[in-house]
Image (cartoon, rainbow, N blue to C red):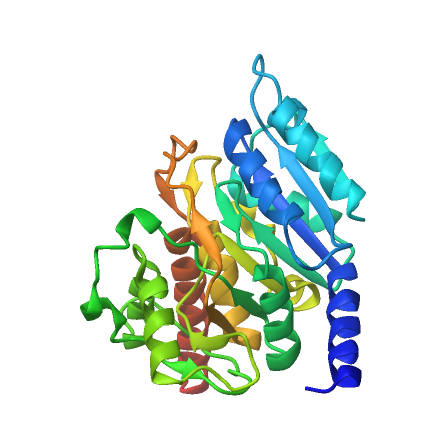
Length: 310
C-alpha cells in the first residue's frame, strides 16, 4: 500500500471513530468496569464518545465514582473522548438499561460493550472497518474465555461459515440448523478458529479480519444505529419483568432478519469470566418476545387465510 492510500485509510478510520458512541451498561462491578474502560483507552482509534449507565444500587458507591474508573476516564478524555455518565437510575432490567443507553446515542454507529470485556487495541478499528465494508446491521466480536485455551472443541466449529461480501438479511430461530452457530462463541472457540484461518490463508487479503455468519452475538456488538432502531431497538423492555435474560439475543435476531449481521475473526475481546451480577434471570426474553411475536404473526395469517376461504 502506498503512502497516499495509507493516509486515506487512516482518515476514514479516524472519521468512523468520531462517529461512534460506545454504550456501557454496568452495575456493581467497579474493578471490571475499570478494566473495560482501560481497554477503550488503549484503542488505536480515538475520538469516540463513551456513555456509561451505572445502576449500582444504594448504599454502594457508584462504580463510575471509584478511583480506578475515574482515572481511566481521565485518560479517555485526554485522548479526545467525550465521557457521559448516568447514575442512580431505578433498576428495570437489562433491556431497559440498553434502551436508555440507545436513547442517549447520537452517532451513526453504536457499540454495546458489556462491563466485563477487555478489548485489544485494534478491536474497534477492525469492527468499524468491517461494518463500513459489509454495510450490514451489526458486526460482533464475541468475547473469549482464555481460561479455555487448552480446551479445544473442533466439534463446535462445524457451523463456521466465512462471509466474503455483505451477508444479507437472514431469519434465524431455535430449531433451525443456523441456530447451532451459537456454539461458535463457547469457551475459546474463536481463538482457535482464528489460528486455523490464518494458517490456512483464508483470511481476506489486505484485511485484518474475516467475517462469519452468526445466530446472534453478545458482549461486544457494533450496530448501525438507524438499523437497530428500525428493528425496534430494545423498546420491548416494557413487555418484560426486570428479572430477565437474553435481551441482546432478541435485538440481534431482529436486526439480523432485517439487515444482516456477522461476527469477525479475530474477535480481539477477552471475557473477564466473572460471576454475573444479574441474580434474577428467570424470564427468557427470546420466549417472551421472539416466540410470542412469531406465534402472533402465525395466528394473524391463519385468520386471514380462513377468512378468504369463507
